[in-house]
Length: 408
Image (cartoon, rainbow, N blue to C red; front, side, top):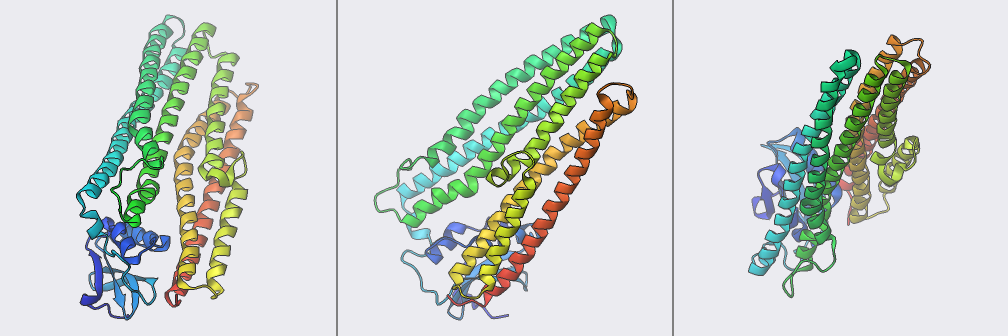
């Protein structure tokens, strides 16, 4: 392993989770390759005691990850490196006015996170109240006669509480999450002093927007949508309980309504799994296989471009960064599938139980078969995603090994 002399270290961070990419970016004089950030993020999870150095090995600028004396990774950032004008990022950001803008941007992110935490609490309460409403719905139907009345009244109180929580959550999202997110996205919003280094503007503008604010926005939007789902679930539970009480028994119409509500939710969750979690790569119900084919082919093409050996270092890192970005999107999709999959499994279990209990019902057995097939489809989708992620990680590793020996 080549030596990085102490005098040649340009930047060092003892806590791998606190790497200041703005300083690394300033040293390079251009954007940091995604593959470098992906590698540091991965080691941050697997080796939390690791640390990072950026410095020269001979004439080339490297990012080195170490755990004590053990070398974990070396990524070449630039060949035949020379310091860019204003390298280091500290000079420009020492300016009082620039610091004021940076504090403002950090404050906007803090505001977004506060809004997210506010709505996480609303989400937790709404989920618990939706579960309680469904339990009370069963009690109202089983109890028959007058026993259903207090249960339905309690459910209606839950209905009002969650409806108000949704309004509160929407306001928190609009004021605390979406507004600062939209403000930073608007061109010309940040009052940078005249002559501010463009790299500083980019680091705390578009780069900060993409890396720090956009994930909070996406999570908050998803939380808000799920709160709306809980409102719908309670509405359905109240309607079903009223129908059950009115019928006075577990009549075919009551069971059918429950089956219909479960199928509706299960199919809606499946649509989210097979469509939205893949963003534009998988629009349209059932197109997730097309999306995964596209992801696989995209990563293979990028690796083949690196493997060809005709590109310079910067070009190779760009191709590897594209693979890393696609893996990040796939990982986000897999988390969405796991979360939505739990709801699918819950609905499927209830539908299969209803099918077993009401074998002569006109719709329950068929719904149980549908649920059984959906569980198989969900398992197949998870398996396919894991397969493509593993293949992509292998391509990224092999590509990084190729890039280490590249000349810019």
